[in-house]
Structures are given as C-alpha cells and as structure tokens.
Amino acid sequence: MNFLHSGIVTATLISSALVNTEVKATNNDVITSNTGFHYLTVEVRPTNSSADAHRTCNPMGSAISYSANKIDLNSDAGGHYQYLCGTKESISNYHNLVTGIGFVINGNAKSDSEIINECASYYGGNFWTVTNGRVDMNGNDTGQLDLNRGVGGEYIYMCIQNDPNKPPIKRISIAARGNRNTAINECKSNGTPYAVKATNSLIADLNAGAGGAWIPVCTDVNINPSVITPPPGDRECGDDLQQCP
Image 1 (tube, rainbow, N blue to C red):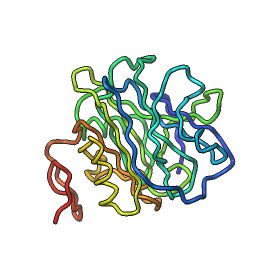
Image 2: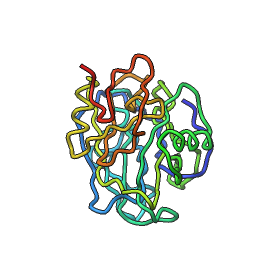
Image 3: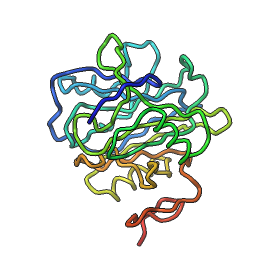
Image 4: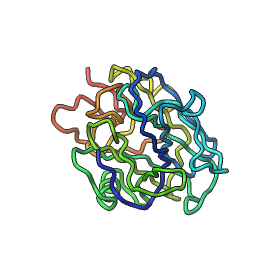
C-alpha cells in the first residue's frame, strides 16, 4: 500500500527491513482510562523486537505514559507489529479527550482532507483528525498511516475525534480471531458493546482484504450513526450491531 504525505496526527513507525511473517497468536485485549484518552496513536515495531518490547508504547522515546492494547493490528497477515496506544495525559494540541474513533476502508488512497470529510460526514460532528506515521527515531514524518501498509488489501485509515461537547471514550477493545462472529463477540465482551463501523457502513476489519485474522475495534461509547442503511449483502442488523439470524 502507498504511504502518502500529510502532517496532522502522528503515529510512530520504527523502520526495519525485517518483515513479520510468523503466524501470531490471536486473542482480545482492552485498554481503559477512568477519565478518557487525550490521544491515540499506533506503535509499529519490527519483528526483531522482544515479546515485551513490541507490546509496549513509547512513541519516539516520549516521557508521556501510553497504554498499549496488546492485539497486533496485522495479526496473521504478515508485516510489522502494530499496536493501538492511548495516553491519559494532555499533550500538544490534544487537551480535549478522544470522543470518536473511525475508519475509512477503501480500495483507493485518499488525502487527509478526503479522510476527514468522510469521517465527519459519516460519524458526524467536527474536531476530526487523521492518524499519521513516522519512519525513523528522529521523527521524520512520512504521512498517513495505512493500517494495511506492507500487507496488501484495502487502504485503511484511522481518524479520531476530540470534541469537548461529547462524552469521552474510556474503554477500547480489539479482538483478532479467524472467525468474524467470534472476533466481534469477543471484542464486544470487555465492557465495550459497540463495534466501530467504517464509513462504508460495515463493521471495520483492520485486516480488510489482506487475509489473516478478523480484527474489529469496540468501544464503550456508540459513535456509529444512529440510522444505518447497510449496503447490499451486509448481514449486520440494527444499531446494536448484532448479526442477523
């Protein structure tokens, strides 16, 4: 997948020639905050990291404390290790708490403005930004982080919202299972009953088109549109996101 230039929200990408080809264990995990998260990022680690190192978040050696969700966002699809990280500390321009998480999943690359407009149009509200990436320890910004970078499949972009007028997200769960229904049910079992839908109205799979495990993201706050018209062939039913019989 292409890695396009932008400069809004940053994620940490540690460059490595090594590629993760092992079949990784699938499971589910949740990160929590009693007050909410000020910032979300994705930590990307090469495969020569130790088990402990590649499951921790320390963007650019930051002194700010981050919590890591231990589910690899590339589970069973190859590529580098990727982990969602959240901080409870106010940083830079992100003093407001995270109130929304969204995903744009598409066969074509998109610009920052297209991603932000699509997230705002689908999920509603303002204060949306795009998760970007870095490629070295010096913090050189290369632009948008495609969550399928290096493994093929769809382009997957993550957007976050920091709206001071909305309730903050305090729990974020991720599951990785070979079966779609199992993954969604486990994801929703951690006090996080709402599976995040992408802007295509389908529950987001962070391995979309790349094979590997089925990877949904769930939260304790429902950020999906209140009225959803599923596209043809979608078997998801109702606002509770349960499966049709």
